[in-house]
Length: 579
Image 1 (cartoon, rainbow, N blue to C red):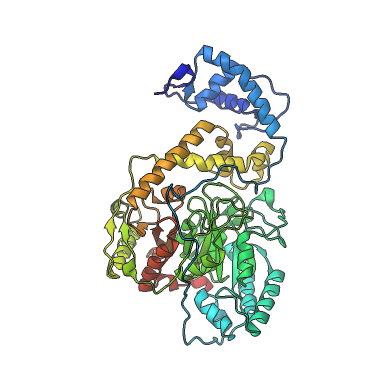
Image 2 (image 1 turned 45 degrees about the horizontal axis):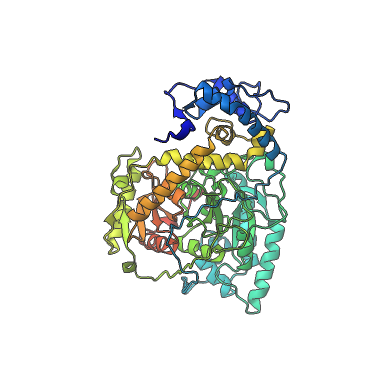
């Protein structure tokens, strides 16, 4: 207990909050009360009345605090001055691209990582021949497409035209396409063909068509963030990921859907569909990225994850995805949602494709202060005996409603054992309230879209439910700064605990949504690879299994995922309607 000089406050008895408490809290924040019953949170209005002790007392209840009458007397004048400071801050327009001065660092004190990669090998299939019907390559992995392009059996222009045709034919059905970048794509493809013809081969992504989640800026096209308020937004720059893929020779054919402002699969044009079941959404928020790659509309895609936005749509659609280590890939030129949790990563048809894409996009760029140069050594032939593997028994054993998926997960664990690996049990620290730390995401997202909330343009977003962004952004204004800091301090404790649990372990095999692993590792910054591991007998939709690596152990997570994928071949199935 801390009670020095009675400066601290005391928690109150739990009492239900009422509308007045929220309105008082909004007033204390310099936000006016709206007359619309559907929206308790409000927009900035000038000339607000001075705060009273009653306002502060009611606002304190939102934070679960109470103050004495004497303490309120001391606070009231200063808080009126603080509210004036809020007004001053709001006179400055802060673009979404501006990062806070505070940066999250996943590496704990004393940790060091090699900066220079020592090996990059990838599979070059032998005996490939150009098919009679080029569209037969729509579902080929990048490793095969790359060899056909490198050997000049297929041109980049031919691949690009084929994928553009499939995007035009199926994009509307899946509702996965926002912008077809046809002019740029054909120009990039022609350049790739010319370079390869004269013997200049950039590597396995040279000439390969790809699709970008439409939160990545591309200066030739609009960047909508999947949200009506930004439908016509043009950002006059390219994302670092986009520039690096262009430098690798890849061809941008489309900007793909995301749930509005990176939540879910509903955007301003509808709901992106799961290629395996068009009555079902593709999950999100990298909705279009997963849907398009699984339906064979692009060679590979880029998605993003803050809390499940690569893992979830990859699971729903049956893609192979990688959420890289936090700081592995620069987010410059990408929409910010949560500066301390956002990551960009590949969504592909195979694990090795993810490795090829990560190789092209990782590393510091001098623009994203969190991005760093750490070696990424990829060798698909690396002996599995090199890996120290664990699994989470409680996550596999916990009873779930989806018994078939649980059986698939258990079968995946047996596949790991069948590879000659004896995974050791690992349990997550169970005395930490992981769910309570979600306020970190909420507070940062509320700051990222503060202007949207205060302007009232959040009413333009498609989803207006309790769990949708408009309400979440408004609620975020009620998160005390102290609690945000405390949640991040608890995050540090969780990082240390998980580091100790992972000591001596390279990869953890885990159900994709088992226990607290997904939330914990998004908070700690660990990488997670996800692959399909079965198809439900009822409707044929996919399930998945995941592989969590140590910090910057993306290659190890991908290597084990590749071995399991090669032993099962679930990723080779195609959704019948698009095959």
